[in-house]
Image (cartoon, rainbow, N blue to C red):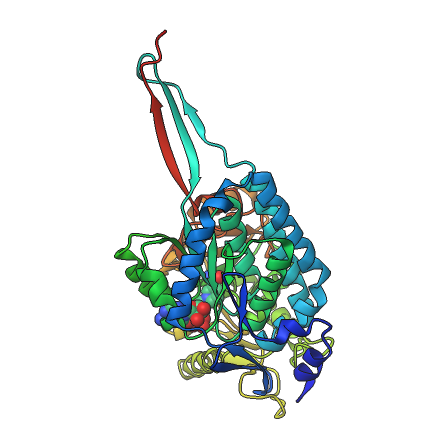
Amino acid sequence: MVGIAAACLRGLRRRDFVAGAALIDGRWISGGQRDAVVDPATGEQIAEVARCSAADVALAIEAAERSFSAWRGLLPVRRGGILRAWASLMREHSEELAILVTSEQGKPLAEARHEIEYGAAFLDWFAAEGERAYGETIPSHKADSLLQVRMQPIGVAAAITPWNFPVAMITRKAGAALAAGCPVIVKPAPETPLSALAVARLAEEAGVPPGVFQALVGDPIELSTPLLRDTRVRALSFTGSTQVGRLLLEGSAQSVKKVSLELGGHAPFLVFDDVDVDKAVKGAMAAKFATSGQDCLAANRIYVQRGIYGAFVEAFGTAMAKLKVGHGLQPATDIGPMTKLSVADKCRIQIEDAVKKGARVTSAKRDESLGPNFVLPTLLSQVTEDMLITREETFGPVAAIMPFDSEEEVVARANASEMGLAGYVYTDNLRRALRLSEKVECGMLGVNTASFTGSPIPFGGWKQSGLGREGSRHGLAEYMELKYVCFGDLAA
Ligand code: NAD
């Protein structure tokens, strides 16, 4: 396992993808100081990247502001053409981008490949949405007047992105901002800068003009503080923890930015006793173990109706035992390392707490060659509401399964959370499915499916899971202002 990521990166045709330079105003900045990029599976350093400063952010904001007028002035179809070219380049370099993602983030290569396609699809989607940024004509309530509502780009946008989807979270934000006519400054997570900077290179090659798309890497607080304070930055989009989301919302208050936040989840997964157990287990496995569990849509609380509880736990345990844990670049790996040691430690704390409070634990046997960032797939059964895992997001491959008796009871338990990103319901009873689609408190609900994301859907959460929506036609609105215009005195 040692050396595998470094060897793969040395084999990349595009050497510039590992140069680690930031993109400011059309120039590639290598920086005096450099930060290490580490393979989370082995702890080995695999590259270095520039460490940008607050002064670099100031340059980027000026460049973005300068570029705004020409970019918003382009016909939407021209902006769309550039976004489509960017998507094509991502597909052309899909394998190299996927290797970068796996090397620095840890996810299995097959999932990284999927992320590149998922990410490119947002550029195609918003290329078209930008051409459909329709306004409205309002039937007038005044004589001799015409009432219009227009959609106009808000101005410079900042995007702060996470490490779990280091490519797709950039294109989901930047695709919408650029299509709306806004320049965007991206600050990727320090753990996963290489794939972000490679995507920035492809943006430049696709024809995104200098200043319109910029990517700066470095210390999160040093880089985000000037972005928050500057009144020329009109919109902020963030994906990450609820804790940091709150800080950014507070920091944006002074300059009253338009803020959209995709924060943590704590998804309930409800399984009723009228379903085929194997189908429900298949869904729960996918909803729990995708991205090695480091997914804000992950099923964090699996509630199974008592009549099938035993059968479900057994089948889930059997399916879980087949998961292969290892380096994401090794073929057949299902579960890679946690990207950050703190995420692995949080899983271990939740397991320990649950076991201390009476949960039954089943997990694969530890392979001592796996480093500290690895968490083995773990099943906790007989979980109770006093355990940490039922109150805190896990963000790792630990499944908590609890029995329930009635529909009313399980809805109350599912909704007893300050989070409200995703939810899942498995039932063959149509009337129950319709009832629950109304009652479960979340922004996205999968009914008899664990697979529902993609560019056409409004991605976002209720309660402390966030503000605003990404993807879909709603995603564009986060980067636009409405303008109402009243033309009066029109009588001949
Ligand atoms: P995080 O919130 O610390 O990091 C996300 C981004 O915010 C990174 O770019 C990071 O550099 C930046 N950041 C961190 N502290 C900052 C600060 N004080 N000021 C400005 N920027 C800052 O996320 P994490 O703790 O590394 O990730 C774990 C949690 O993030 C998970 O538990 C999950 O809840 C959440 N998450 C959610 C999503 C989602 O799509 N909703 C995606 C990824 C992570």
